[in-house]
Image (cartoon, rainbow, N blue to C red; front, side, top):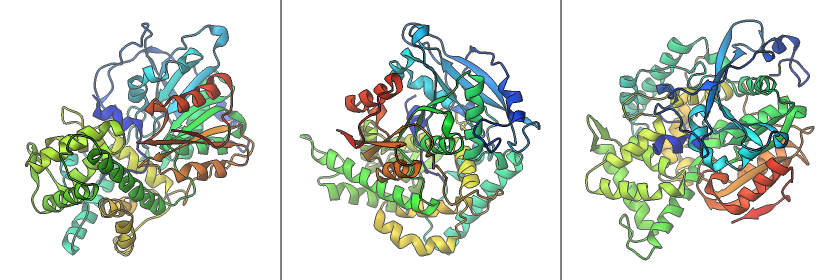
Length: 512
């Protein structure tokens, strides 16, 4: 069952191709690891767990990507105990050394996305930032090559993602619960030693160790989607170590897991409404409906038909109702994907499910060779370690009417996703993350009015939670997940101005 908590730019890549002590500076024990020296080398091809593919190509001008491994404590409460490896990637600053600010660390979201794979895919977008920063990203613990969580094997995952995730009767509900229980049990069996140590607070402590190992007095940071939650937790734990930071596609830190899922139901429905409006407003005919409502009605009809009879897709796999819903959700992360959605729906109406299945594979982290990245395993592992709530099937049944009101198309899908942590082996940490950071410097917080995965309202909630004078909100009136990678000039000028020159945008700035 896919988990959509706060997916981000890593999704695009797949398709297109702690506090160690009470003070914020870390304990004496953690500083033993802060003295380690990184051995930067040419990057290998990404591992299958990171999404596979070729080694990253040089940047324009010939700059090479370099990779290294950092040691971090497996258990931050036992900093002299066992360690795990954190995979890093960087591109050195392109400008003059006397203009270099330091490292700019990226987290692209998920949770579960590989920064080692994602950063090179978007490297050209950050060329201006590279004039004064080394661009750095990493696979957070539990992800990719950083002690990546392992659950089911590739064959089992093919079957798991084919299963019905929106049960209509008691028998289907029991099968869903059994499937989730089996998946969660495999995670415990194969990665039980790592599961207690993949909380966002652990990753934040890793980032502070990373800051020290990279030789920076402050952590300069660019967080996207879940990366904003990670950045907020870092700011809470280490407020005086925050440098220049930007949060884009902002997670609402005040929400419970249920509230977050309901917000996503509303967000994906809004994105679907916007897609239907866009398709039917063009001069040429919209191939998937004559009116906005007709588009949505036909999609609903397709999904109902698929529940009874899947379509041929990518043999031996068929396009099920779940896979189609998953593929549609994937295509709503970016307006650039809308043509794929149009083509995929048109194809499905003719009895061919290949495009929607390909979109679903992208969401699930399935590589072209049939192997899977560990994005879904990492996603549920981190979410379940973070979120205290454990929802029963009976509770979900009670909440279905509200979810269906929020989204006739995605309501059931996202409501039933809440059972993903019910049988998880590790207790969840809290109802929601603490991001209060009144002693931190200004953090630019960007909300996108058309964002399906992290609804716009979350930006103000994050800005308020960070503290007065810390969170500086900027609004982008656009479509898709995130703002900076939309290439909107107003957004880019504001972000670049802050990260490069320290110019804080005016509170309440609106870009369109």
